[in-house]
Image (cartoon, rainbow, N blue to C red; front, side, top):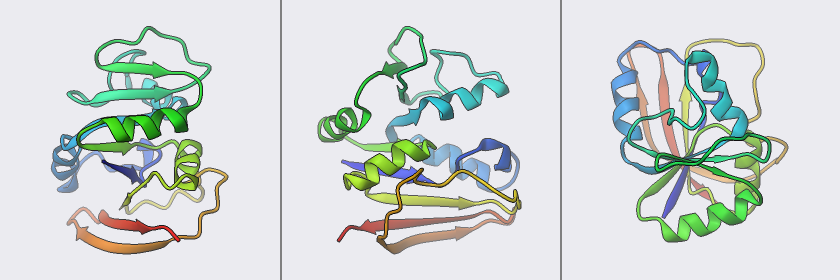
Amino acid sequence: MTIHKTGLRHSTYFLFEGDHVSDFLSDIQQYAAVLMGGKTYEFGFQFGAKKAEPGYKGIKHYIFSNTMQFESNAEVELVRGEAVDYIENLKKETDGTLWLCGGGQLAGSLIERKLIDQLVLKVNPILAGSGVPLFGDARPRLKLELIDMKRYESGVIKSTYSIIYP
């Protein structure tokens, strides 16, 4: 079981058009489930997403929040309490790859427990000036091994790294 962490945090900085979009939509279909912190999940509300609905069709969603309230269903499960322990068990029990979409604080907790296996960074040709740290308050010092890189005509660069823990 592998957990992928993507580097895309805020969709407002994501190019919604271009040759990279079809690859992105194809890539997300490989995942068994997507993991999101509550803030990442709520971010989609400004684009028309609704509570208890999946942001990505056809993929089981696990939303980790102690403040959000909605009824879980077959597509979207709200998880309260200790997220890292829950994800550690989910990683052991799930066949396929889990995708951690956004959630810097959640990613920081997972990286500290050595639960993220790959890092997929999507660099968009947009300068925002500031941003959300990829791993929240955690300050990991890890070696990354580049295993794939693709440059798109749109200017987007997608690089995939294996994380080598000490």
